[in-house]
Image (spheres, rainbow over the protein chains, first blue to last red):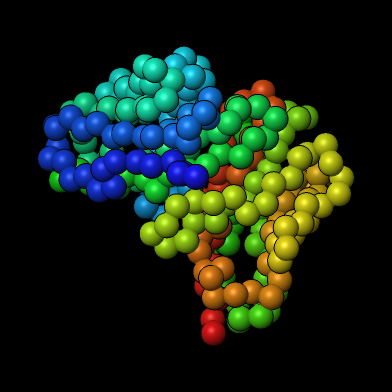
Length: 115
Length: 114
């Protein structure tokens, strides 16, 4: 079956522009996660949804970052007034359930470059 | 909060040989899960192996096995009969029972030489 997909795969934005990154999770997966991966580093947690509810947004680095999942499936991560430090790969992952060690399936990521 | 440490930035191994990747972690939780993920160049991250903290038996998946030392908070990955397709970044990660997010280490770049 289809895995997690993300679009666009690459995004170049000028500093100060707004960007929107899309994630299509595996159908039926309740949980959805966003991670930020800087070059040569491990992914860092940004936010987590269970269905349409955003249960944890403790990893969002500033109020310029906003995520939503209005119908409990597709999610969008929005970054307002992008800064150079926002350059990273943004990974989306989905899981059938959130608890009990269920596997998180990762998408290919969106590589954001802010110039 | 949990932390995951991978102190080796890169390793190299000859094809068909065995290699061990190190990882240490710290968590105050008693119910947690440990994972090794593989991220091939320009490809998405996939799960290699998973270990539940309450299980004493080390997890194995074909050529991949772990050495889970709970008291030492150590979780190393052994890859036997290394193949060229094993070339990738490997991330160790921890997830507590009360917390859904994965906490990753910095990763290690593994190169398998022909």
